[in-house]
Amino acid sequence: MSNTQDNFLLLILHDLRKNIVLVILGILILISALYNIYVTHETRSLVTQKELLSQQKDNLMIEWRNLLIEEHTLDEHSRIRFVARNKLSMAQPTKENSVLVEIR
Image 1 (cartoon, rainbow, N blue to C red):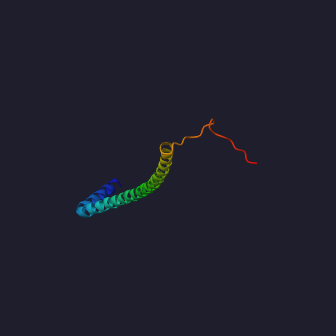
Image 2: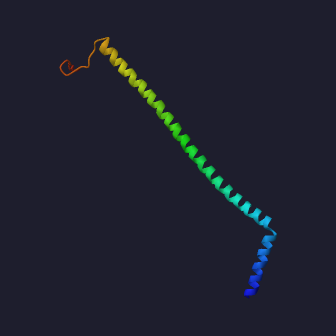
Image 3: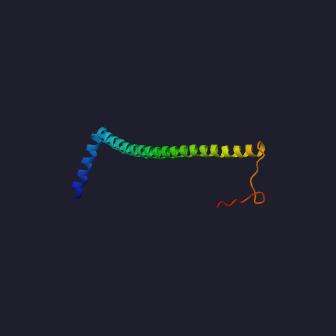
């Protein structure tokens, strides 16, 4: 039994040596297929990451625009306050100079 297994093994090795080009090509095709799977997976992962970053960018741009509008609004209030104090000599009312008027 062992002799037939040895002969069978030698026959396989002899056949592999005889068709070494085909064996190498088969191994290269297998490596190429596995590499193709890896590259496809990485590409999909990077596309997903790009989409997430693009969405974050859009959200940040919206937030930036809102902050600019808020800054502009606050700037208008501070300008009005500045003009009221300096040019019109107005001041914030206090308890001492305020009068309560009742309406009946």
